[in-house]
Image (cartoon, rainbow, N blue to C red; front, side, top):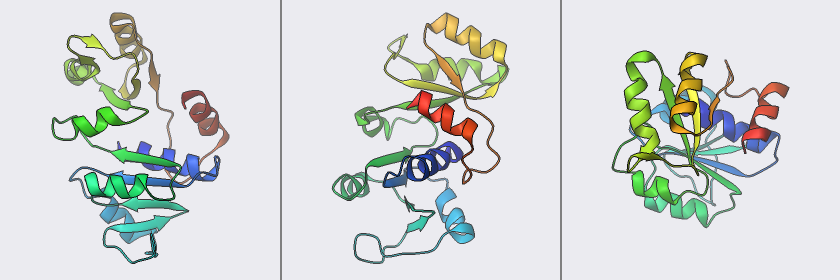
Amino acid sequence: MTHLCVLMANYLTGAGQRRTAVIEWNDHGDFRRMEKVCARRENVAGKKEENVFKALGVTYFGRGDADTLAGCMNGPYDDIIIDFGEAAPAPRAEWLRCQVRMMVVSFSEWQLEDASGMMEQNGRPCRSWIYLAAFGSEWTRREVERQLGVPVFRIPFSADAFRIDRNLMRWFEGLL
């Protein structure tokens, strides 16, 4: 969920004073649209790069791949956030290499089976993953927690991914 990735990057950069990169590793094109609206192109790593821009101190990479990730890992960043988009087999290996893995699931009734399937690997939920609920009823969220035996954290409402208030700061402090 791109909104959460941008929100987390702004929290890490603003409240945490961390150098943060965000990589869009999907074909949604959200960063391309975001760049048009709220970013300025800067020199990143000493040169102008296509599909790379900064907004409020966060560096955004519009096309994620192994080379982009390697460059970020060897670069000046304290944290790298990757927006993989929907669960798909292609980036799964890269996702599993991440130190902190978060999965955003929707608990709308018509998506419940898909959400439960995404949360399980080999028929069991992965306890090292952080599960976040974007949509759905509180009852459904609690029921999934009970059935799978893993916590599922509700993402607090945030109308603006570039504005971090005290409520979001407390939520991120408890999550990270």
